[in-house]
Each structure stands twice: as structure tokens, then as C-alpha cells.
Image (cartoon, rainbow, N blue to C red; front, side, top):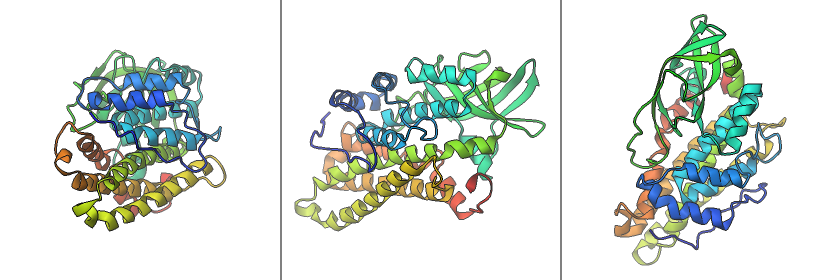
Amino acid sequence: MTIESDYRPAQLVGARSTELTPDILRNVAQGASALDGGKQSTRGNIQLLSRAGLLGLGVPGNSDGNLPAMASVIQTLAAECMSTAFSVWAHRMTIEYLEVAATPWSLGAAGAMLAGDVLGVTGMASAFKDAAGCGSLDLSAVPADNGYAISGTLRWASNLYLDSIMVTAARVDSGEKLIITLPLSSPGVTIGEHFDLLALGSTASSYLTLNDVHVGTDQVLSRGLEAFLGRVRPTFLLLQSAMCLGLARRCLHEARTHLASVNSVFTAETDVLGDQLAQAESALAGYAQTTGGPATPGVRELLTLRLEAADVVNSAAALEIRTAGGKGYARGTDASRRFREAAFIPVQSPSEAQLRWELGNFTGGGIRQ
């Protein structure tokens, strides 16, 4: 693997120092190839960030004003290793859910995650689809002694280890929709064999089956699904956008290094993408600064940014491949890895289809306001 050491990530406007030390970045960069090949786990990098105190920036709801710094951390990680950035995003969002709920059970679990002792699993894809009106909850909840029995299948989640803790949603026959949390070691939880993915194969991603898993009343984080999602969705979408833009900036940087000679025909396209990237990064910085205050961005703005970030990263990755020559087609190169990492973005929840659907059917009601 070749580490392109001349790359320097952009600092988001308004973000304090990311505190991603050269040692941490070097470790992440040097391990990217092994993670891409499924030879290591992203868990070690999450623990590195935990020891550096970087997992709780902006928790919850940008209450400390450090959401720009958290976005900058994830953006910088994505430029070096998308597997790491994605696992950190999933872990960080689980912390967000638990801290927003602020129950005794959830705060104890969040503390273990901030310490890097256990990993967080965000099983919220169907919850956001349900709230947007383009899907329904995957899990059912039946009242049981001092809680509920949870059953159903989640088709995709990541950071799936026996000692991980998940936050997800379930519907009750009465129509009530719950936000719940549970350890994956709970009886009745089955973790599928980890997926063999085109990229991000070291993110411990698979399906989950729950069969009458007991969740106590103290593990219910909220009984108001839409209100809860409204509180966490800005952070959810902003940190996802940061992940896209970090990878996009790296791809664009590498493409620029190959614009000599015949590749000069791509100069104009590179400049256009550079302008689009700069505009998206400016929007991200502004939204991250104002989240949690009276000028918190609306869902329409956040969905638009997330879709634009996805468009930019896929265009940038394709441009890098076209300018890289033969090494872009060699599986073991960084250019090839970034191209495959970018291919994940259109299917990550919310998928490109969901983003376009929501924006096309935006009414300003419910979670979409």
C-alpha cells in the first residue's frame, strides 16, 4: 500500500482542532488496506479515538458547540479509511441516541461506549423510513412482564459483536412506536454471518434476528418516535454528509495530481467538482454550527446537503479512477479502494432513492419539517 503523505485534509470552518494526532491518522491510514481486505476490525480504531476523547464531541444535539469538530473528525477519517469513518459514525450516533434519551440505563450504556469498552449499533433505518412515510418498522413489541418481547429481523446493521449495544425501534399492536435499546448478548438475538462486501467488509455488518427478546421498561428510550427522531436527525445527516465529503476531497485531491499530459482534458471537470465540494463543505460547516440552537437547519436543507454530498463523492471517485490509469483497476490500490468505498454511499440508509423520494414528496409535516 502507498500512503499519499502529501494529502492534507481541509478543516471545517468553525471547527476546533480535530485532535486527530499524526499518530492516530498514521495508524488509520496504514491499516486501511488490511481493513479493506477483511484482515482486521475497525474496533481498534474506535478505541484509539476513545482514548483521545473524540467520541463525545457535540453530544447530545451540539450542546457543547463541538458538532463541527465531530464532523471534522469523521471527514478526516473518511479521507484515510471509509471503513473506520463508517464504524465511528455508527458508534457515535448510538451514543447520541442514548445521551438524548438521558435515562439511567441509557447514560450508563453511553458511558461504556464513550470509553470504547463496547460498540454501538444504530438499527434505525426502518424508523426513519416509517417517519418519512416510505416504509414501516421491522420489529414488533408485545407487552410482557416489566417490559416488552421484541421480534423481527433487521436486514442491515454494523458493529455487530456479542458485546455491542443497539438502539432501534419497534411497533406495538396498539399503534405505539418505541425507541428501545438492548445488548446483543440478550437471549433471543441472532447475529448473521458478517457480510462479504465490495468494500467496508471489516465493519462487522450483517442482519439481526430477534425472537422474543426481553426489553425492560428501563430500556425504553422514548415512546414518541417522531419527536425523538426529530432531535437526532440533524446530527445523523450532518455526520453522514461529513463522511461523504471527506472521501470526496481525498478523491479529488488524488485526481488533481494526475492532470498532467493527456489527463489535462479532465481539468475543467475537476474544477467544477472542486466548486461543488467547497459549497457542500460550507453548508456542512454552517449547519453544524447552528444545530441545537434557534437556527437549527430544517430537514429539507439537511436532506439536500446529504444528497449533494453523495453526488459529489461518487463523481469524485469516478474522476480519480479515470485519471489514475491502470492502478485504478488494480484491486489492491488506494484508488480502487476509494472507488469501491464510494459505491457504498448510494445504498447507505437513507439511500439515494429514499433521499430523492423524500425531497420529491416533501410536505413540511411530521419529521420532514
